[in-house]
Image 1: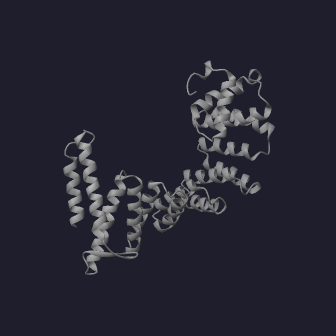
Image 2: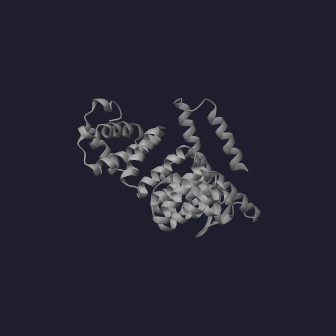
Image 3: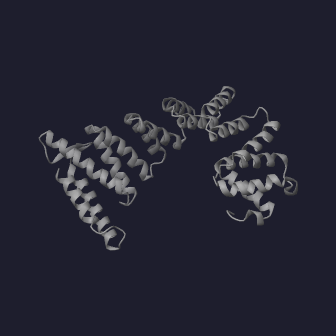
Length: 304
């Protein structure tokens, strides 16, 4: 459906747009073409008014995605005449202002929407995006945190807040957010690794032990395919081993229930990295000599 909508009957376009809406998909180009055909041929399409307005809303959003702000504004004008008090139309107005670079005006529009509809989820998220786009990072973080007070199950919002905290160097707050993400999606190795990276950066012995656990989980869940998690595991074991030396015990470090050799997981991760790069070089997927470079890095790391 992504090509040649002009040759497709309007009924197929309508069916496609309904499918996109039902599954909450984002397909800017085909939606733009399909919605344009339906809206511009609404008499021939024989759609009910309620359906037509939904297709117009899809057209407005898709038009912004393909940088056709004029079509978006014309569509908004029609919707505004029919629904002068609609929060959905006002959100579209805000999005159009964002596309024109008038971010502060867009924020003002979202503020007005939220005055009337305090729990409008989309307006709250658009306001966060607009504040971030305007470089008003502190306000964006506060707005997103407030949003999560109401919509605690929005995992993507927790993930975004974690990233915003990391950008500001607020790793302890980022850890809290990543813990929420891991709790919501415990089988995604990427989340475990991102949490481990924050803990590693904080660097206390307790944080490093936790980082090692999450790096190990990421390695296990990815079937040892997450290279960054493997390196992170080796690095974390190295730092724990060095902390063990400071305590006068070069071989072991505390790990929850007992004494565990801190080099064991690091050596295991290093071995997996060696095999990975060796296999890649053998089939030509890695640059010649890369194994030697990796070997040197690992030797330096594990001998430190």
